[in-house]
Image (cartoon, rainbow, N blue to C red; front, side, top):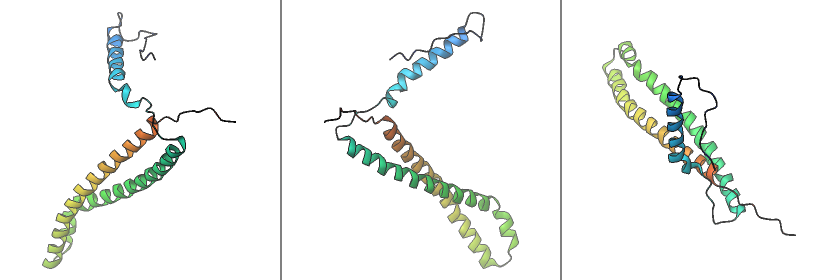
Length: 144
């Protein structure tokens, strides 16, 4: 398989150094990271692989829905945290102010937890997508 990119037009300079440099960088990146997306054969049957991909598609859907809800919760927490001074100035009762200050401390931990959870779920999502994209189904001749 030829991964080389050949220039057909030279738009960058009169001698094409910029284009050759960019193509060299792209070709080196393809050489380094091309093995990541090469198909991987598995040792089990196609039916097991199809069932596994089917189950992983449900996992992808669940993770996508969880990420959407976590992002909404993160945005709401950040908005409340940013406007905390206005909320504190709204109340005069010292117990309510203490409760709001305590909730702000808890909210800062929630923001860290939600951010970490979103990153973790995105990592799992990318790993599952990588497995689905790189796993190849072996074609077998049909038996008669």
